[in-house]
Length: 470
Ligand code: BG6
Image (cartoon, rainbow, N blue to C red; front, side, top):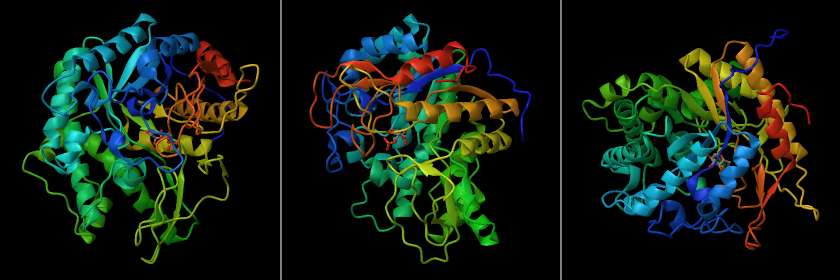
């Protein structure tokens, strides 16, 4: 659709940006924090450990002041479960409770609405030892953890996100460092049982939020990308439907409707991987209602038909992995790529928003979107990241178009507020508006510098997205 009459973004649009605890905080075993699965994993070769990261734990005041300077209306951050509950259950760590309470107060001091992700890739290691999400008890573990969060922060935090990228935990958990396949004979059985427990835990926590938090709003935060067929061959269309279902609709159909997607169900049946569902589970999920959908978008995916001979070459959140007999990842020759090989597709962002809205009719907030790059600090303390400005501008333009088409968008939180450690490609893959002066292994002085994108985003926020010029 060629749009001539633009609508403009809502007045209370939540401009902000995102981080996650294990990637930004550091202080990973300090002040009573227990280890998480991220602290006990072997980090990919050539990348830094997660013990210091951006040292947000000690510098959150300075960092939030910079976010306030940009004019943030919201800040999306996650709570490290094992900082609050070092063993995952049981004894609460008062220093952990205090830390997030301080972060929340610091945000509120500047009128920044905290948007809290309850779980972002960092299950307490103690729970992993007890079987992690494979253990049915994980539903109660997460529920009890959520209760502590609502009790302590529910008076000040209105917006909650349950689980970050549950779909990526299932699809590429090995790359993110969350999946242990030792001794597993049927990976699908394990992964989709874990997935069922997470879906149930999420549903119970959505109920709980509505009971405990006055005016509280809660939603999921999967990574959603529309999947394109590589050609208009009918079989490629089927392949794209398969991947759309496996990658995205499974998670949103469950969160919104409490219904297993039929294509995914068949896929699981074929792989002898139907999860064990106890009486009452489906009712809980059907009755749980998110108030909005949070979603991370980096790019679309493109697939072709696979006759069962495709090879599942390792891939990550955005490059994807071929699923023999369902779809084969093919890449899209019409798109450019970032220097880390991720395709860039702003228009695909719009089609993703359109598709999501036409399926679920819920308000949506972008909880991640951004460009990882090797930024350079110049001698005079500048970072000229015009490529990031260009990426973000092109994506914001598409939000404006989607809003003009009637899609309800509540806010935009790109990844990331500040440089942090990538899931598997180290510190050098930078995303932030704020540069952190450290290298992969040399911590330097960790000083903060404002990138060119910092000043640009400030102006975007000031004009509520009207002025996107550089
Ligand atoms: C998302 C995650 O998948 O993408 C973040 O929610 C992550 O944790 C972000 O950092 C960017 O991915 P990467 O692999 O470049 O860090």
